[in-house]
Length: 156
Image (cartoon, rainbow, N blue to C red; front, side):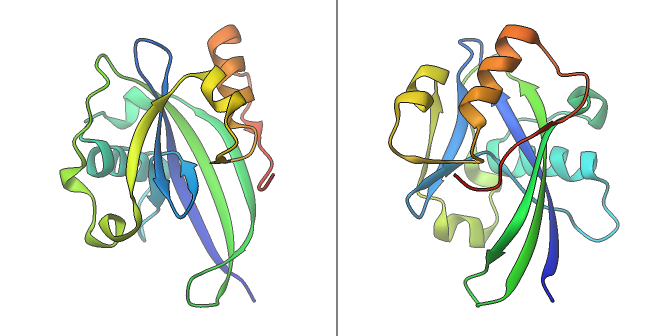
């Protein structure tokens, strides 16, 4: 039986419409992480944003969930996990982040960060998670928030 792991993730955009991604194990991914017991999805997003980037926001600042994706993966310990990711959007005024609040285990696997344009993401041969992120960013920038969360594929 898979272990359920819901996460709150963040699409952090700077004034130049670039998205913040972290790198680890040959892939790029959005800031965010697991929801603590008793914590709401929005509260987890606010906490993860502050811990991983230094940006402080309130739950009201986040707005609705923009996108979701879900699927199975195998943890480093060999356990089958059903991940369910929910993505919130955040606009920042400066592309400066402070990773000092990252948890010790995050520091062991996150190897860096970068601000990506949508064109750089679309042209890249690097693995970017979730699949469909470049198209989602393009759609958000062109059309604004979707009426309902966009369902993204789990894997490429």
